[in-house]
Length: 398
Image (cartoon, rainbow, N blue to C red):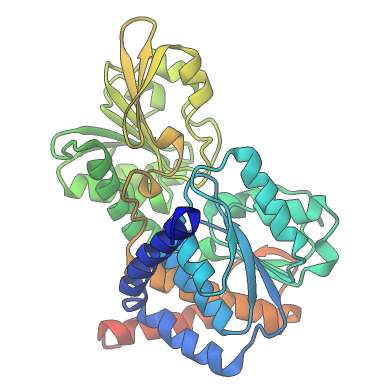
C-alpha cells in the first residue's frame, strides 16, 4: 500500500497502540463497557460528540458504541490527535476533524455532527447545544452532557428556555472537581509546562489567574515542586481561601511585573487584557489551561508585536516594540493538550470522569423525564455509586 492509504494505516496502527495502553488502565470504564454491551442502553440512538479527541476520550466513545450508540462527532479545535481519529475509524467510529483544521472547518464539522440528527449530545464547551438551539433542533434532542466549567457557564448564560432539554454538567460533580480538576489538571499543568518549555519550576515565579478547582490544582502542584506562586482572584471568597492557603493574593496589574509565568484558569474571556503586557518583565511566559482560547488577549498581544517567531512546538516568541519579549504557549489554547506529545490529564482521573460521563449519558437516554430542563448537576445516586466504586478500586476501607 502506498500514498494516503498507507499513511492512514500507519496512523491507525500508532493510535491503536496508544489506545491499548490507556484502555487497559481504565478499569472503571471497562466495567461500564461490559455492562453496556450486555444491556445496550443506547440502542437505536445517535450520540453527537464535540470533544477533545485523544486516547482517553476514545475509550469513552468505544464504551458508548458498545452500548449500542451510533457515535458521530468531531474533535475540539486545535486538540484533535489524528492517530486516535484513525484508530477509531478502523473500529467503526468515524469522526470529523484534524489537528490542523481552521476554525471555519471546525465550525463546519460541528454543523455536520448536528446534520446526523443526534438524539443525545456529548458536549465540551457548549458548542453543540448552543448550535442546536440556533438551528431550531432542540425539540428533537432528548438531552446531553457538558464536560467543562466553561461550557456550563456558557449554557447558564443563555436566555431562559434557550436550552429546553436536560444537560448534565459533569464539571459540577465534586468527584470531578477533586480528582480531575484539582489533582489531574494540577499535575498535567506542571508536566506540560516543563515538557513544552524545558524550564524548571523550583524558584520560578508563577501567577495563577483564577482560584477555582483548576486554579487551585495548578497553584498546589506548582508550589509542591518549588515554584513561588501568587493568585489573582476576583471572587472575594475564593481570594480569601487562596490567602488562607498561603498564597500571595493581589490584582493582575500588581502581580504582572513580578511574574515570570502567568497561567490562566478561569474559563472566562479577556482575563489577561492586552494592557497587562505593558507591565510584564522581559521574557515572561503566558499560558492558558481553560477550555476556550479566549482568556489571554492574543490578538491584542500580537498587535503590540514587532515580530512573532515560532521557536518550538507550541512556543511563540513575541517581540514587543520596546525591545521586551513575551513567550506565548500553545497560541493561548489549553496548555496540557499542546506540544508534540500531548498527554492531558492522567488516565486514572479521566477513568473516573468518563464513568461520570457514561452513566450520565445513560440517565439521559433512559430517564430524561426524571431530569429538569437546562443545565444541572450530576444526579446524586450516580455520584455516590462512583465514589463507592473508586474506593473499592483503591482498596480504601469505609
